[in-house]
Each structure stands twice: as C-alpha cells, then as structure tokens.
Length: 531
Image 1 (cartoon, rainbow, N blue to C red):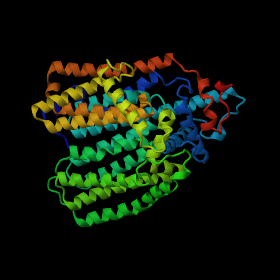
Image 2 (cartoon, rainbow, N blue to C red; image 1 turned 180 degrees about the horizontal axis):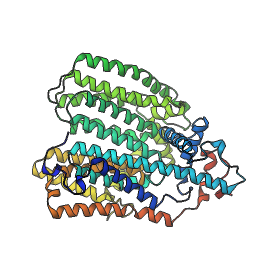
Image 3 (cartoon, rainbow, N blue to C red; image 1 turned 30 degrees about the vertical axis):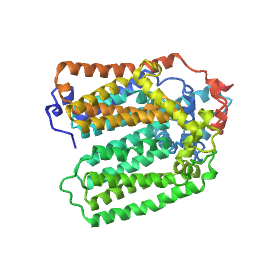
Image 4 (cartoon, rainbow, N blue to C red; image 1 turned 60 degrees about the vertical axis):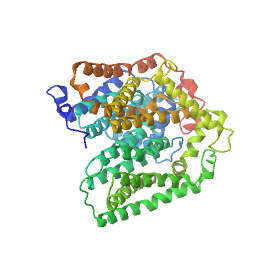
C-alpha cells in the first residue's frame, strides 16, 4: 500500500512518535480552536445565503415537510443537518428543531436568538465535518505514502487550506459533497495499490457509494468523480497472486444487479421528467440530452476495463471490481429514496442542464444560447483557464491568492525534479493531480470561483505535494529543507486566519438578503433585520 519502506517512514520519539489517533485528534482540535476563536460567534445573518436556507431545511425535514431548495440540490446535507438538530434537541442543547417551533414574528429578540442558536449549531456541525474530513484524509494519505510525517503535514495543510477555512465557519452543501468525493478518490487509490481481494473490492464499493452521495448533495462533484477512473489507472499497480473465483464474481454481480435496477430506474425517471424541472433546462446539444448519462456509465466501465488491461488483472477479478463499483454507486443513488422528491431525481439525472441554469444566471451572455454547448460557454471556459493560470503567477492576478499556492509551487517544482531524476511515473502522477485541481477551478469559475469551492481542489494540490515529498524523502532527513517545509506549513496555518479576521471587521448589511428570503424560505416570517 505504501510507496516504499524507508527511514523516513519510521516514527521518531518526537511528536510523530505519538499514536496516530492522537495526531489525528490534534488536527481536529486545532481546527476547532481556530473556528471557535475566529468566526463562530458571528451574527446568524453573515452568511445568510447558505446558513439560513440550510438551517431552514433542517427544520422542514424535522417537521415532515418536503424539500423546497433544489439549487445544488442539497439533499444529502439536508438529511444530515436535520438529524444533527434532532440529536442536539434530544441532548437538551437545541430547543427549536421544527418550523412550527419558531418564535412568532412579533418577537424579534426571540426570533434573532432562535436563529443564532440554529446557525451556531450548524457551524458546530461544520467543525465536526471538516475535522473528520481532515482526519480521514490524513489517514488515507498515510496509507498511500507509508509515512506518517507526510500524512500529518498533508492533513494540516488541508485543514487550514482555503476550502476548509471557509467551510468550517459556515454551513454549506459543498462541504459534505467535497468530503465524500475526495474520500472516494483516495479510497480508490488505496484499493488499486493494495493486494487484490475482498478488502480492495469493499473499498471500491465504498468509493462508488461516496461518489454517488457527493452528487446527490451537490451535482458539481461529478467533475472530480469522472477523473477517478483515470487516477486509478495512473496510480495502480499489478496485483500479485490474485486468486478470485468466478462464483464470487457471480454473487457480487447479482448483488449489484439487485441495487442497479432500481437505481437505473431513478435515472430514467429523472430523464423522462426533464421538462418538469423547477428551473428552465436547455438541451445540451448534439443530441446528448438524455444520452450523456449512458456515456458517463460507459466511461466508468471503460475505466475498469482499461485498468484491467494496463495492469493485467484477471477477468474474474476485473468484473468483480466493476460489480463492486456498480453496487456502491447504486446504493448511493438510492439514498434519494430516504426522503423522495422528484426534483432531486431530475437534478441528479440531468446534472449538465442543471448546472448550466446557474451559470446562465451569473453570466447573462450565455443565457441567450438555445443549448448548453455554445460559443458563449467556450468563451467563459477560456476566461476561466486564463484566470486559473494567472493566479498561479500572483503578478498577473494578485487578487484571491490562496495560501495553498506555496503547496502547488512545491508540487510543480518537485514534479520537474522527479522527471529529471528519471522518476517519470511519479512526476506524471503528481502533475495529473495538479492539472485536475486546476481544471476543476476552471469549471467552477462558471459560477464564480468562491473560496469555499477550494474544498474540492485543495485536497488534490495537497496530495500532489505529499506524493512528491514521498518520492523525495531526503527533504525530511536534512535539517535545512525540513525547516523550509515546516516554515511553509506555518505560513499556510497563519494565512488561513487572515480572511476570517477581515470578515469579522467587514460585516455585511443583512437587509440585502431580504429580497430573496421570501422566495427561498416561504414558511418563515420576516426576519428582524428586514423590518
């Protein structure tokens, strides 16, 4: 599972000699202290466009009422926040967990206090989710690299990167979505690098389920999910001594089929109701609407077959891997049936059309296109490529510079060094992760790349740097480069607090939210700041 066994992988008697669970817990505690110190007590309306809407849906679900917000579509997060509110209520920590329990509109003080408690409870959940994500991430990186020092540093960089710094201080659907899909990627990489067998197939099944759950929470996760098959081929290795029976494959295939039939039925239902979407969909173009979903399924199957061909995997085990993925993906999609709503099925099934709706809202120039694929979209993507590359120079785009850019520079320079040393596969692997991160940033620029979106890209840049460091262990053994690495890590941690501190000094005018609140929260009376 690890890339090599070396002195760098041997824990010292210092900090790195502590139990791994203790080191992971330390990451979580640092993240929690950071958020509690800066940002946790901000007024409930500071991030109203997500905090209030998501808290409101937790109340809706606990009232037994149907979902009303389908932009992301947000479904997975609504299930989690509703359960979190119920748990806190059972513990006596949150008095109001339903819409009917909210104070009357005539009592502004009680209304403000109720929403402050609800939003702070949601921020507490964000702390737990970001901390849990960082700990799982560090553990999987340790499994990939075999070096706890690299894994710990990777976990800290992720914890205090742009994405987690923003996500931990507010409620957002992309936190859960990014955590699921990045964990799916890492789980897949661990699975394809470990000995073939039941455990590896279980990891692949888990990866498929997490990728599907990421999409039902926020459909943008599909972009990273589609890169997982390529990553598996690039990071894979030939399994030694595989003994896998056709009987076991048949059993797994039957289980996959049992879950796949209703899951595929959901997708067909979503495609059939394309015209019933709450938002005005436009066709993709080239006759792809209603068909590209099959192309995506074929892409996943092709990835498994290509992996089997490149790494010479026996047919029985390759088909078992495909069945495990199909089972996981199907189970994840069937989560839509926990609180059924047709609009969620439509959004997930027609994710391209769904995302284009919100791109056209932000960029009115593409709103006049009769279909998704058009000149306006390509122009926006070209502008996104320029913005993404310009930010990496700092000079050409000095705004919105992420603190993790030093990590990207390290990964890029390290990939060049590895290539010149002859370690070309490792260099390609590191470069691939960076390119995927930049590609995601280009795509997310169609919605205006927000700091919180870095929850999808930071993990890839950090993994690229960790992969480089794992192939250059001498940097950890020599005092001077080790000091530079620690210095870079400290810089990331300190810089992570710059924007949150600025945010506490620049509170927005809450009245600017009053125009959209009646549309997205129709069951709630006017907020105190709306007069």
